[in-house]
Image (tube, rainbow, N blue to C red):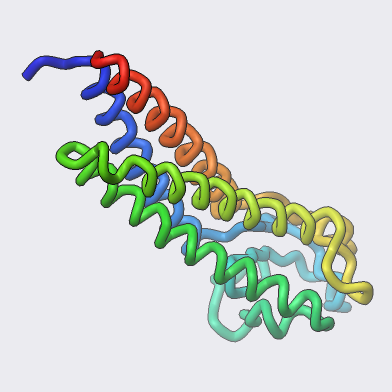
Length: 198
């Protein structure tokens, strides 16, 4: 097999499409924000606690004990205003759509080896959508972290003595956006090579 520039670009595009898919699915299972050791302001015993926030749960537990189900709260219940409840449901939904889009991108990249000229426009559109929607998730989470969504609840960065920081889930979503962007650039380069007959 002769390794021509279009074949190399197509292989790299497939690799980054797979990377984006794996990162998107993984981000649903890892915390987007974590608090390694913090003092729980609501607990008068001043027990240090650990915490994590996934797309669906807000969890706090004493740092000496193991995390269990009894101290988990659905994020929709965590927010005390309608705006916060709606925003977190939007973020959850968009994160799932990003997984679907990256899966579609990966499938189109596989079929692109055989029908690249037919699927090119669809792949470009889906890559743009994956980039845009993953950026939306990142933006919404940044807004929650720095500005907050409810007047009665401070943003995470100012939440009493709880020192929240970005978790693996948030970093993975940034990776999805980056991998999709690289895939888009590779698709454009691949198209240019094909037009030149390279």
